[in-house]
Image (cartoon, rainbow, N blue to C red; front, side, top):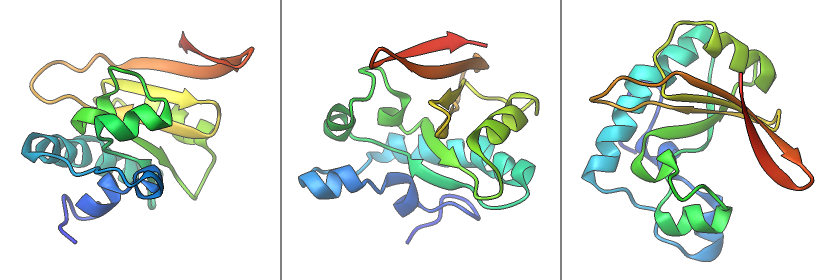
Length: 147
């Protein structure tokens, strides 16, 4: 199991129950692996340190077919290896979201998704937007509000 960083492996950043269930290929290309490595180095490892314990990645890289099946955005940064959905066993998603938001860490997007997980993204080679959003379901449709 190749390690991308001390605490994050390629396997955990690419594992998808949806891909397994539907027999879909979820292997990243070399550029995706580079992006995943930078995401782990520049954001996930610092978040782990900020949290004071482990971070669980519930969704990292998604191939276009996996992204389609899960209903991801057509522009999802998951497809380029620039995003991860995470949780922390030490506290709830809202606390993790606020700690990241107030940390000064560089990120492209930070989203509290439905109070159930935190989406983070990092883009190498350009200034990250530090866009902060909250996703809520409104009449069965996801709505994203800037914070």
